[in-house]
Image 1 (cartoon, rainbow, N blue to C red):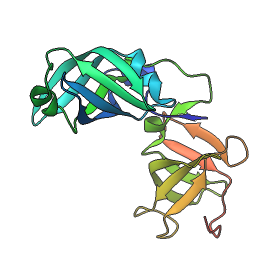
Image 2: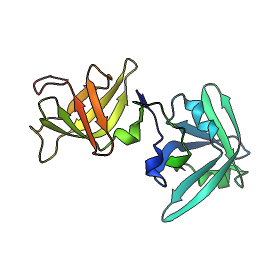
Image 3: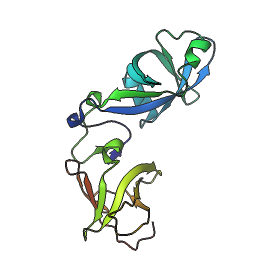
Image 4: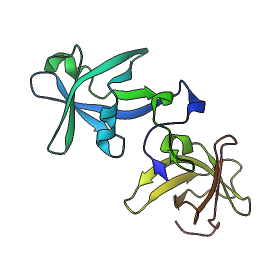
Length: 185
C-alpha cells in the first residue's frame, strides 16, 4: 500500500511536503490549502509547518482551519489580512519526516518510493521511480530509464502489492516487480 506524503524514523530530519498554500480567501487572512495527503483533511493533524521563502526557512503555526465546499481553508498566526497572507501563496508546507505516523509493515509513503531503482524478476533494470500517480483503481509508479536501464522506455507500472510489486528494500534503494520488458504500460 502506498500512502501520500510522510516517512520512516530512519529519515529523521528529512522534510516532506504535505501541502501547498493557495490563494487568499476573504478579508481576514484565510488561505486555501491544497493538501497532498489522503484524505486531504489528514493535513489538519499538524499545526506547525516549515516553509521556505527564497533562502530562508521558518515555522508557520496554523491557528484556525475549516472546510468549505470541499476545500480546506487555513489561517496562520501573524497573517491577519489579505495583504500579509498573500505573501504565503504558492509556498509548500513541510513537516519533518520523524513527526509522521508510522505505517504498518509493507506500507510505504510515496516519498520513500521515489528514487528507488526498479528491477524485474529477471534482474533487468528499468530505471528509477520519479513519481507516483493516483488513478483511483490503484497507484501507478512512473519509472524513468537511466544509463544502466535495459532500454530507454519510460514505464508505468501499477503498484499492486504481491501481484506486481514483489519486494521493496528501502535500505538498498530497490524495488523488484513482476513486470516483463515488453509490457506496454
